[in-house]
Image (cartoon, rainbow, N blue to C red; front, side, top):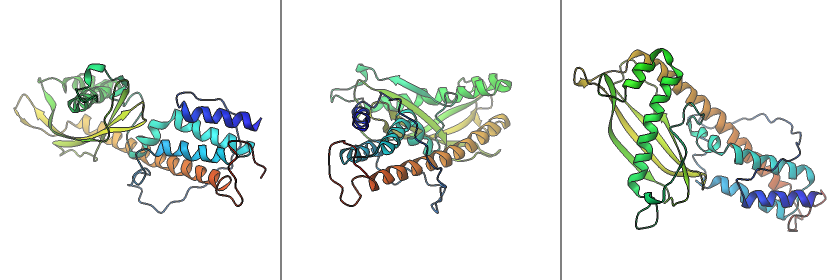
Length: 289
């Protein structure tokens, strides 16, 4: 039975889109303690491929033999990173991944977006960011119906609007077709009533690779088209942005805690399998403990 469960976990390691239903294993809650700076995401010091690394580490544990309880724990970890990988990767940095905050979600990469080098053209990343920024802004219209008209007008030259002053793009790896992208925005700092410009951080996630394909930094200016000059943020925007910034901070704290606890759980598996005294590789058979 334990061998069959181990083989099931092997399938997940090579087919990440398939999520097994595994027996629930009762775990004693851990009290998390950390002396690290809360402003630093848990993933800051990790490899961009840390999710894949976790699967590799669990695979090594399976090869050295794990008990039925450990099989359940390994399956629980794999299920968590399969379902909540965006929260673990992006949420730990403060990006809000819920439907009401996403700019683009699983947007299909089109074959024609690739260039002669066989990867998505660099210009396309800025277009992804642009489309996502518009959607991110319009999402506030749905969550703030009292000011829906004002939020919608931000994308027009009729009143107060938002103008992109500059964008900096940091390419992480060349995406190729087929793939899908999820694009998220977050406020870089907490706005005030005197704010007349602000910075947005952008994360462009490859769904196929489950890691950032690019990062952008957008410098946004608040502009009054009626007076033809810069303007401060209207009060309703300040209130909503401050609320959003607080949600970002909570997301970073909560998801960073999840990442650290998940890595601790993987380490416990390692100490109970290949990193134990007398461990021998047996390609998935359950070893007596």
